[in-house]
Length: 163
Image 1 (cartoon, one colour):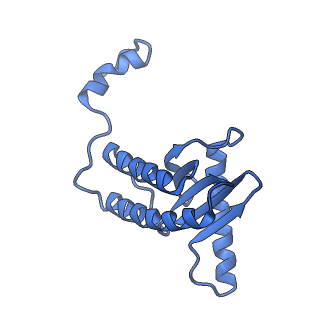
Image 2 (image 1 turned 60 degrees about the horizontal axis):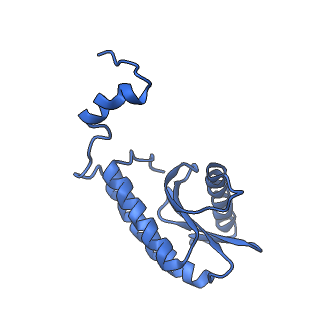
């Protein structure tokens, strides 16, 4: 298990673009990238109104881990996707790598085959992006610029920063 890398602004934009393209192709409603512990790394789309995304991410991580362990217990070494079919929404979870997964929510009008097809390709892209992040890619930019630090007092109701 690898620690979750710090997601830079450039990496966050790249992950978001990957998710947006995926949702467009698979006709899904909502997609997110989460780590093994259920932390949301990126998300896009519109989740069902009743869904608490933070709770959904934690439950998805736990469900995926439990099902992966069940597969191991019956001798299945290859487990990378979990599908849940509902009457209004479906959920497909795909492992991108050992520490990251793609969670997709889609409606009943979308076929699971279409989502599976694009999810497998997108999971591969996410795995590459996460590997680059863990390696500390050269495009890493500081999260806060000088302009951000200068604007901080306005954001924090005029509180001044002490050096």
